[in-house]
Amino acid sequence: MMPFLLAEFTNLEEILPLYVYCVGSHEQKHLERPEGYPAHQLFLSRSGQGIFRIQGHADILLTPGSALLLPANQPHAYFPYESTENWDLGFVAFDGKAAKSLLEQMNKLVLTVLQVPNFELLWSQLESLWQLISLNGEQAYWEASKRIYGMTISLLEGQASDKKILKGVTSSGSPQPALQAAVKLIHDHYNERLLLTNVARAAGYSPQHFHRLFVSSYGMTPQQYILQLRMRRATQLLQENPSITVESVAEKLGMETSYFIRMFKRTYGLTPKKYKDQS
DNA sequence: CTCCGAGTTGCACCCCTGGA
DNA sequence: TCCAGGGGTGCAACTCGGAG
Image (cartoon, rainbow, N blue to C red; front, side, top):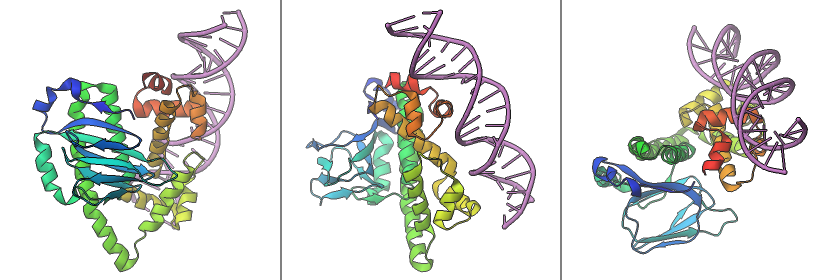
């Protein structure tokens, strides 16, 4: 995701109590910010791992599925940590009159590694934020303002519910790890014909029970989750390989071309070809 | 005009979903 | 746990547009 900046819509800074300053994701390389960044930032580490070096603090290691809230103007540097995998880092920078009090409210979550229980959901919110802004320009910042508020609140909620989950594990042996294993299976095989029955059996649940557990944990059906994964991968492939054909993208996702185009258009409102031409 | 890639549409199958 | 219905998915045939 190429980052999008609010720069050209400066009047919105006066109107919106919370606004998205910049949003994007990419393979992260070494970056120094001795003066800090002018807006608050929420980082999401998706794969690989990296270190945040923040003045006056011990180094912070971000592993896959973790997040970091970094206040504005905090001098820092970040770089990939020894890993064979690229560090896939998403970020959303936000500011506004309400941002300061929001961060104060969340002060226990600032400058600390946050293990996000519903990481993929938060990541998809980041991506939809990027999609929203990249496709709709100024109009979208109003909607983006609502969404960034929602993201920070769900981060807060995730930390609270995480504690509940941890309690469950110690007292009664929660089924959560089995569900996570099933999700890993989905991640490993999303580009194949994946039967929910098999995933459920692998996790040790009946398909119906697995479905119910999945929806309550991830807020969406397994089907929606897999489709989201595929669409996300599709945008990645289209951006990374400008010469790639729509057919081979569909093939890489394990989808039939016509169905892929149908779903892509339904998800993003434009065909894969038009998307590729725009990016 | 032909070729090719992209996109659309209709149809059939069957599996997922969600209510009971 | 069961089961009916909706919708996900694949296939085939088609149109469209651009390039040569």
